[in-house]
Image (cartoon, rainbow, N blue to C red):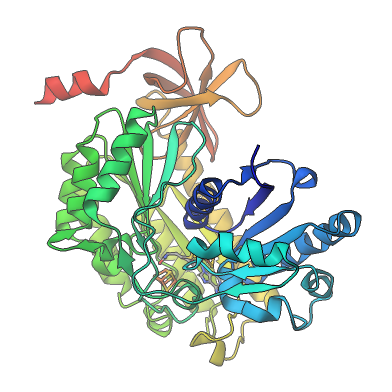
Length: 459
Ligand code: SAH
Ligand code: SF4
Ligand code: F3S
């Protein structure tokens, strides 16, 4: 029987998902148990995101919900972790977050606030909280990588693995350099060792994570070296990575992806805008021309490569013309997918000092146009795959029915096939696509695919 039951909810990016596993690793080692039921918990933790205002409003709403629970169970500890903890610090405990009703409901119930670089001290902060005192740990570190901590992961096929922390890019709209601090990398050997362990445990896909993985460095080794080393662990384990910043995507990295069949041919390459003027105001440090030449080069070097991106609508001073350039760029690249957002001013960033002068209706209208165009492009790309063969990693039953299995191609597309007894979770299978929507492919089983046999054939 453990000390107390911990319940944790995770918001934001994959790095937060990976951090939650770190936190659980730390807490389990200190004798805590984990529960999936908030009402069974002695400690409720929210691992939060600050990237846009609506992400923070959601957390205030959630804290409001937990207030009710705390009324019934006065000893309940509620903690805020992650980027919002780092950004708002003691405001989460003491002051009323400005202009937020739900914030008022939330604030009094928070017992501890712990930022992304202080998770080692969580057990200590929890002890303090159990003694009835509030605890705050929000120091950012230049060295903390949690290299030695074993994250708590449930068995599965897919794992997240942070290879670096922080971001030094300082895009003018972005809060991450402030909430996550400076860039620092884990050692290559510890990452490879973790991939080995995951692979031996039956994981078939590992996604290497960093806000800008191209900045990864360990002595002489860069990110391409790390990718290659991870790919060599087992041909059965696919390696993905995110995110690449267009400024530092090297030729070496592209050749490394091309050279290893189990490094997925899929690059998430956020562009943010199709206007050079806006890119400069955003401090993205590349031009549309440079970005397009990168895409062309990647297409030449990696056969069958696909791309996804992030786009922001309504950055300060964005005109209809700038917006049209973004749509134009999308038509030229033809992304397989995109994450699309309305600009949200973040206090403390450079862009915060610029006037948020694109009115909300215009931001919304532009975002709508961006979403519709992407939808159309994804639909067309997926239609063009009908009749083609793809290899998928089977992940389990489809969400809608256990008559069907769901898997993903190496370009990260979901494929649904009829379930057959012989096909198991974790199998690689060849399928033929027979139908497609903008978000999903449907196909039929052709034959099993053995990545190791393929190695013998190509060697
Ligand atoms: N490190 C990654 C992404 C981090 S945040 C990169 O460099 O691309 C994920 C996405 O959120 C960003 O790519 C951007 O499109 C979006 N985003 C970040 N700050 C934002 C803001 N203030 N308003 C709207 N979208 C934002
Ligand atoms: Fe934010 Fe830019 Fe860093 Fe990405 S690269 S996390 S958008 S500052
Ligand atoms: Fe959000 Fe922090 Fe990730 S702000 S997007 S959780 S790095």
